[in-house]
Image (cartoon, helix red, strand yellow):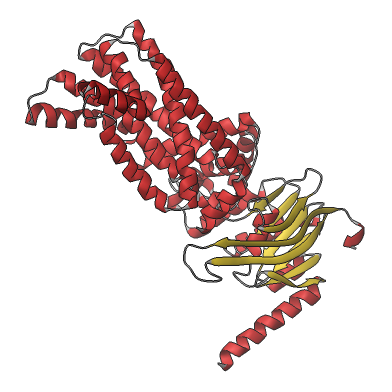
Length: 243
Length: 257
């Protein structure tokens, strides 16, 4: 299915490592990704699955151009831009939700007018009501994530990178967030979706990559890859119980 | 990022920073005026009331030196920590890394504007007159700003490379304060030493120039001022190029070091 579509993004044998301050790992060298090659096709929803700390977020940061690979090549085609949709875009706790939302939108490239025009939608969707003009430091954790999710949702980009954001707020808001997310994903939008939850990935993605310890273990049909991943997690749990 | 959008962002981040700062304190924006006034009050208490040997001239001398020096030291120290302080943002969007130190410097500019107005008023109240020579303040302030931005960029990059630089920078500021003639008159030293201090330490030259203009209505050495401006201007351009080229590297350092 994906083969006859345009490639928007290509990673060729990408590795990323860095020196950590403490001399652990390989003489202080920490390898996050090792020889990862992958393609992203126009309009698809690609899932990246794996346990915590296997390099999923780093992979997204490479795709978004936030980080550069130590070796290998990240190639984004034909002037497309990718944006990382993630929770809590560096909120300033002393500023109101409104100011934080405005700043987030502007940092992601919206003009002042565009950003201001988003504000009403953000206020409405996040259901923050009068709290929208209160300092974020007075928000509950749920309110914060609602604001973060909504602000992120308003950005429009060619490639949307989503990092574990569907675990926000209470059940009611989570349902609403999921619907909003799905309506964006099912359109023409190209999406890379990161999660450690197999069922979410299986439901939403056209293709799945399973990442383990910095490299790709399996790639392909969502059903197959996610069930293989789920099995490996179950096996690991059993091993732990056995020990 | 288009230049206009970049400048708008700096302005809006600076203003939001100021607003965030103001909401943290009961007295809010009043601190802009209160802080420099308290400095002058402390100097008055220590040097006039306790030591008793110095007149109001020395008080104005101290106020001018200290309030100008604080603009430099506060901006550079805070800007040095600005990229790692914005770690949350740096890991989520690919923005020019100069944005963070620039926003901090801009915050300082808005604050310093109020301080300069205050300083002018205090000087005039104390019998100094604002003459046409005060126009020399315009090029002086521009050069001062260029020096601050260049140092802010250098500091921000160094702290990204190793956090230890944050310690060195704050110690360096204390060293600079004692060697830039905040508390003593560089012109009261041996003539050779005066020349040495003014030639080697651009901050000492800038502080002296403010005093020469505002207290003694004397034009500063424009060639010297121009040289400092060009030197730090070149440094600034080099830093901008470096931070653009190595944006991802700085992000990695900020996120992992």
